[in-house]
Length: 365
Image (cartoon, rainbow, N blue to C red; front, side, top):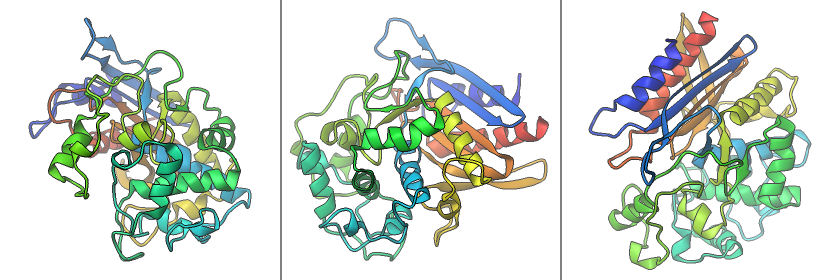
C-alpha cells in the first residue's frame, strides 16, 4: 500500500471532532516521472439500494475549484493573449460595476459581500448578473481580504465581455480545449458516473436561518424553491444553480481527476515558459495577504527536506486542486464530503495530509 493509498483509506474511514468522513475519495499526483492515483470508498451511498463505488473516472462537482479551473484560467488566457490587464478597471468591461480592478477581485480585496443569496431576489441569469454588479459594497475597497463568491461572479462576467462569448463557450475555447479537458463542463457532468452531493440546499438554507457564517439581510422564507433531494449531477451551489443556470464564475463546473491533471500540466508548462499561458507568473506572484495569489490559494508543503509552494483552490463539495511548479507537478484530491448525514469534515483537514503525502511521493519517485 502506497502513501496515497493510506491517505485515502484514512479519509473515508475516520474524521475527528464529530465530523462524518466522506464516503469516497480519489487522490492523484502527476509529474514528469510520476503518475500515481489512489481511490477508496463510494461515490454514492444515500438514495440508492446499494453503494456505488468511487473510481478514478468519477465526475465531481468542482464548486469553487471552478474559480481556478474556469474563471482564473480564462482570465490568464486572455491576459496571455493581450486581451486584458490585471490593472484594468472592471467598469471597462461591466458598466455600472463598483470602483475595483480585476486585480482587486482576484485578490478578494474589492470590498464585496462574501456571499449573497441572489435567488432570494431574482432567478433569471441576466437579472442575477445585474444584481451582482449593483450590490453596494460591504467593506472599504482595498481595506483587507474578504473572500468573496460575488467577486468571481463578476470576473465570470468580465470573461464573457472580454471574450465576446457566454461563459461556457469562453471557458471551453480559452481553457478546456487548450488543456485537452474533454470531460469538463458547466451545469452537468460529462458521462454518467458522478459523485453524489448533499441533501438538496440544506446547508444554504441553514446559513440563511442562522446567519452563520455570513449574515445577510435575507431569510430562508424569502425563497420557495429549496431542493430537498440527494443531489446527483446537479450543481450544489445555490447561486449557480437557481440563478445562473449552472454556469457562473464562482461555481458550476463538473470535471474528473484526469481532466484536472491535464489542466495542471498546462499550468506547469506555462510556469516553465513552454505552455499556452505565459502570463501565469503574474497570477502566481504573492499578494498582500498570506496564502492568496491572484485567483489562486497557496500552501507550503515540506517533504524530504524540500519545502515548496502549491498553488490551487479548494471546493466546498470536497475537491481541491493544486500545482507545484518547482516540481512541474499536479495534485488533485476529489471527495464527496457533503454526501453524509452528519457534519462534513472540513476541506483543509483532508487536503493537508493529502498534499504532504503527494509531495512525499514526488521525492520517492
